[in-house]
Length: 315
Image (cartoon, rainbow, N blue to C red):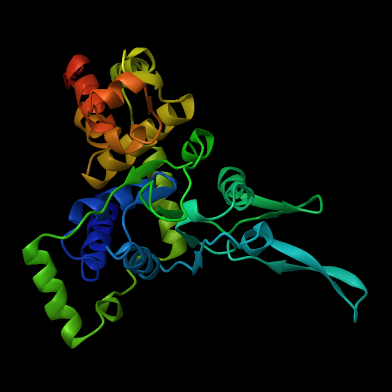
């Protein structure tokens, strides 16, 4: 197992060549990829979201497509369509941008609901259906979607049912001064992305994902996850708690985090480390929480404090 764990660290180090000062974001994105999840990054333009996706595509040897989601993008642009070919007299499939291993859906909350639904259905089903014909998406398949903060010009909130399709939500934020100076110096001499090399192939990534599935979770940890998820459904300031899909995402993320840390089993810290990323976009606050200026992060931290962690004793 140690050899595979070292591979994950090599992946992180390679991505860091292009994405400076965001080590925790790089690790969380890799964790979600190993857990077979999709990632939503909510942030302002220009903080490196596209660079992050490009770096991962190169390090993991994945085919990569990027689509800028604007109001005029159609579902067929994303999933493809069948077109009549005069020469053969038959309809042939013209692939959409989603036919790749890593798809960057840029500013997903600026396009129409119909186009959003087409993308998110493909994410959930692992394929696209056009004219009653289903075509499987490549394996592995990962979506990194970005959305501008709500209130930005031309944006609209994603429905809760669509947000639930993303395993985690992250926010990159501005770099600190030291990281920004380092970035400026690096880009003055060369393009950092050209320094990023392949660490694993797409086939090897699938093998890593399969190893993550085999990470052990003790019954006490399952109980712990169920309790903290249950708290989101009964909290006085939360009107919509985390769904069962979110519970599964929490377990998968905890497994992947344990794997990256070099363990074949999950400990409570694996759960608490990823809980905010899994739950933050899945809970809906009551008006009294917003009036009291209580945020999702505040409530998640409160829930973690309320639920006692299990004590696991090795034999």
